[in-house]
Image: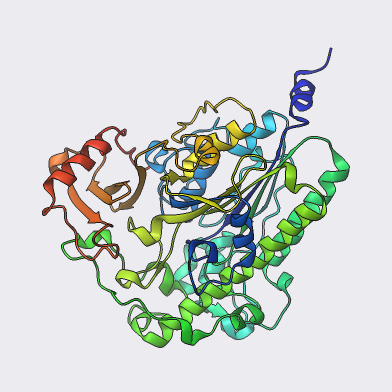
Length: 482
């Protein structure tokens, strides 16, 4: 009698391959999302062959928790992990991650690049992969002058779990670098090469479908990309954000000053207010995005060359958004629109309409149940909480509605800011978990009238606030930090 594992493999043999493309810190500054300054022809090509989600949101705007959300299908408020250094298996040792679930059902899972957050004391998850994970650098320099003569910098140390107790004694590396080198001199070029190698090996190794997660690290800081990608953009084209002040009547703790951005030279809280510095940062972000886009293009080309495209579901996902000077903020770590809106593009051959788009609200946690349904599998059952909904009805018919709001969070001290985003509004409730709602501080923004979030309307719109509070009440209380 055939073994259970063999029966699963046989049943999966004719199932679709799955390729998830993860792009670190990528907001929808893409040509296919209407950004006139973006140079992203390969991601645009993917969007032209699939469905683009215009109203997709992460569940928390920082790397490690957002990647937990993707891998587990669980919101941060469900598992209580809001920071970088805690591994999800500390809380749910028996959790079944998305690649692990597919592996259990006959797919061959593999990781190239940044999928989970490794660094800041955190590590990868060996249970998720059938092949050893290929990990590469997130923070990387080629020019000694970028690192005070080739020294280990504080962000390199963070991301490689070195000298974590001595970070402040280490020098800062530069926020940008534009060396005249080939693509594989930096990590994303090498990651693309490893993905291509895995695709080619898969053709000769097995008849089972693959489940590949390819994690590209740019445009995460530092903006280190080959010179040719900087040359694709004219720095004079970048206009700094017109409004660089916090929303009127917003609680001060909801925003940020400094943080991650000033861990890089030559940046300070003061000089990032200068126009020349801001244009350099914008130029670097767009150049790094173009570099990542070119590597994604190589992978997509390989799918075509190996005649895999017609039987491979491709999903592109950005782990969170990024402030580019709006409100005076840089990087992520807030509950505001620019830190939380993300690109999600899905190409499911024979199902998605080429070049289509949808306004359906979507969350990171929706990807896990969506891919399970596309593959013909039962909805995953955990044991971790599964918070997402399947987006398959939307893939079939983009006007379909499967949810009327999205949900995300961000912590500040002991408070957790839980946010409800509808087509028109965002409300954020700030309070300690399990504390009375009477202790809460609220934010409310109307994107129909005020897309730039210039004023908090929580006091001025009591009826809208009450409606959104009732939606939030349908969600479980946030878990305490674990």
